[in-house]
Length: 372
Image 1: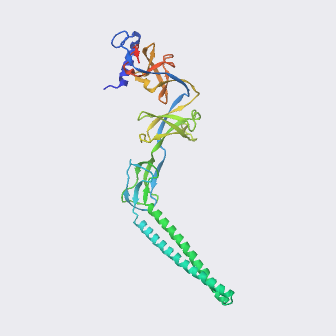
Image 2 (image 1 turned 45 degrees about the vertical axis):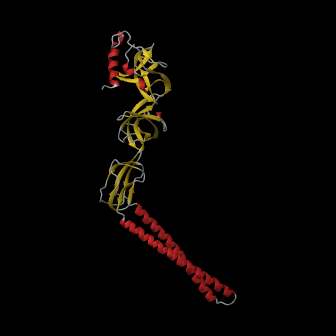
Image 3 (image 1 turned 90 degrees about the vertical axis):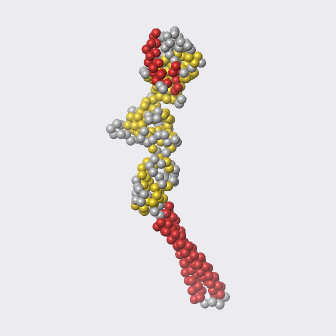
């Protein structure tokens, strides 16, 4: 089945050629009225825009490496898989790491038992010292006995403080052993897509060996190389329209960075425009077009996007003039929300306030009466 755009192209190419005769396809002077929907041509003071070639690039890319040496015992994902932050990518043999945790737990229990014993000894030495000191004050104890008791008390206190330090060290060793065990599992650093696998099941990896590369999902950047004569027309935070060629999509993003480092050969500056890609439709490396605003604002004609039709000779808008259909060739300058900014190819053929057809244009011929 032929598309509406093909039919429109056929009508326009034939009818524009025969418009001077004012003859519709059926040969009648005017033809039957066409039932259509119309909208009004608007106008707004807008900045002119220029088109810059861009490329899509991920916001973040991370080469995830093993944090501990060992043999790879599990690969949980493969290239192309979508992962969330913290998802398991791979596991490294953790038998020795688990044994180290068990050993550290046992050492901590022994240290905690030692602290209880040394505390009891220290308390007893304190009581004996105080008892002998009281007897000395009543003349019932010798100085030598008191001094010996004081020394025993200080030694007991030192053993208790050493036991406290041993417990702290044992807890630190256990924490380190648990961290090493946890690091035997390689996890995704952020939500993204696995784009490269760099190890195999059973392979031995060292600390720092690359395992996977993960590209971020969600927001994506369109990077446009803006010529030096235009770079000062844009500012961080500006809303920019991006056309993704491969999909024919038009999306709006915002400038997040203007890199002040020019290409030595082309004298262009990278400008990053970020927009959402929650559905994952856009892939890094896709080509795109960035419509950058330049120059001063001037009054620009605006028509609904549905009013613009493709023809064999270019773009055309069907306007209403004295109740009849008239094709008006136009040049699309840029998109503006749900509208296109257009420039008529012939002055006066399209003006502010004129009705244009937004539904039913594929059936029209020049001079045909309109009904709506």
